[in-house]
Image (tube, rainbow, N blue to C red; front, side):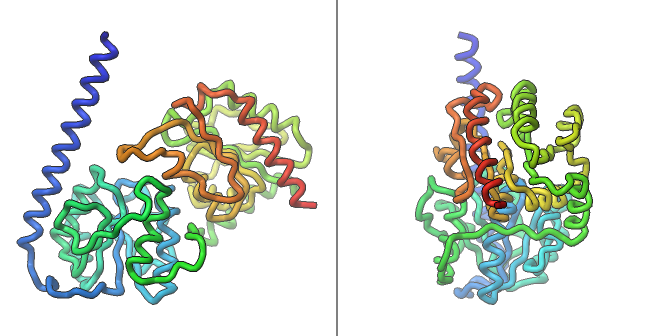
Length: 367
């Protein structure tokens, strides 16, 4: 009974939060309709497109990298508004005109910089979340010449892109955007991440001690506890890999405070370099990756790498299956979709079976 009441209370609180957010966004739409009408009669899309990237994860940033390349190849300029969590992904990207650092506590600096860039087309490519309040305020105060969104029911957008598959993979919305802009999509939507030379050099120096062996990168922890392997599972995987083949070296990748307790050995090394972009280059140098973390999954696709990725069961707020919407969507990926809501509750023997198969393929690739 107590658990049932807790679930009812949780559902009620979530419902009220959604209603409050929707009211806040609707109010911003009303206030925005009274904005300066300097560009209100401009019907054509400016060739300078700005994407907000606030409150999003690193994996999302890797996915959006593909649209940057597609647009710049078609003579568009692309700028990004990102918070400190993901700003580094875009700060040195050669295809990004401006990478504006958004500070939630003092956003007016960003508003003014965007105003100075007008006429711009502001494209909100994300689903409605709490960060939408920041995005809507940017539109209200920066006054972009044109706005494009993907969510019906909000007058703040001049145009709304119709999603071809609302419950499908997240990358399809960027293909829909390209079609909306009359840009021909001739091939699969490719991800992209730019790695500076300094990070490449750091990774190669770190890997120099692996003595030319094939690298197997193991990411034992995702961003949330549901995506954590248990300590017993981690020990089982590492022990199995250590005894599997003398031609491989295992690199442990993850946040330092999470992986620091895992011991190094002759053929197991923790990555102690703190930059995500350096870790990304280690992924690029790997033959096989094992990961429950979606940012690493998307990196593997960007670099066309073999990966065993593990997805616990999760349904998103729009009803989509997380393993589909944020899945690997990659021909070299072996995606394990669990029935369990936590990886630590799953059967590790199933995962090891797939690890063996992928490492065998990787070793055959080198022949």
